[in-house]
Each structure stands twice: as structure tokens, then as C-alpha cells.
Length: 143
Image (cartoon, rainbow, N blue to C red; front, side, top):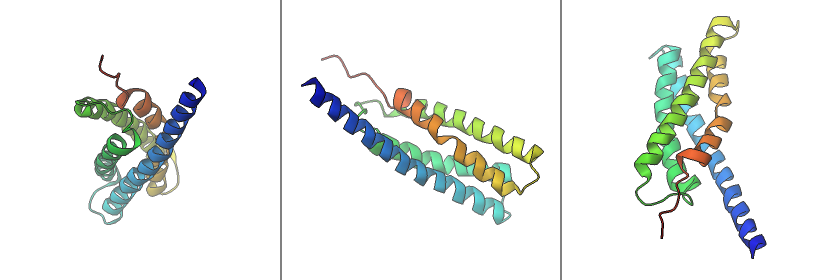
């Protein structure tokens, strides 16, 4: 029996990783497209464009992870707790993203847009661990 339980847990967790990757890709593309369009169209400079991209990506990311990637962890009445926790993780990831971008803008001799894309690409592993282990993980209510 324990082997069967372990296989089921492994299957569930593997599926969560795959779903997280899909939602992460969608959120990352959302971030990149929104930020790039705002910047390249001359609507905003690179930093405000990045903030707008982050906000759009947060919406895609939280919704996708809460309702799909980590639905097996969801407990009744935990949506706002999960959202607050995921916001902490996302803002921390965004701070890392912004630091990378700021360093790029300060020191790299290459185009700003490359720094924007690099900053967007670095954060997903950090986000998965925080989301799986904290944001969406809630203890089951006592029976």
C-alpha cells in the first residue's frame, strides 16, 4: 500500500511541476509581451514597463496556479491566504528581477531589452519552490 501511495504522490507532484511550468511560461510571456510592447512603443520607459508586465503576469500566474497547478493543495477558505503568500513570493521574485535589470542597465553595454528578458527569465525556479512549499500548501483541517 505505501508504494502505491508514493507513486500517486509522485504522479501528483510531477503533474504539478508540469502545470507550474505551463502557467509559468504563460505568465512569463505575458510579462515579456506587456513590458516589451509598452517599452518598444515608447509608452513607458523600461522600468515602468517592467512593473506593468509584472502586474499582468501576477494575475495570470496566481489564477493558473491556484485553480490548476496546485489545486490538489487547495483547501476551502484559503484563496486569500494563498494570494497574500504568493504575492510575497512574487514581489520577492520581482525584486530579484528588478535588481538584475538595474545591474544590467548600469553595467551592460548591450541593449536594454536584453536585460529585461534576462531579468524575466531568472525567477521561475525560486517561484516554484516558494509556491509549492508555502503559498499554496495548507494543512488539512482537523477531522
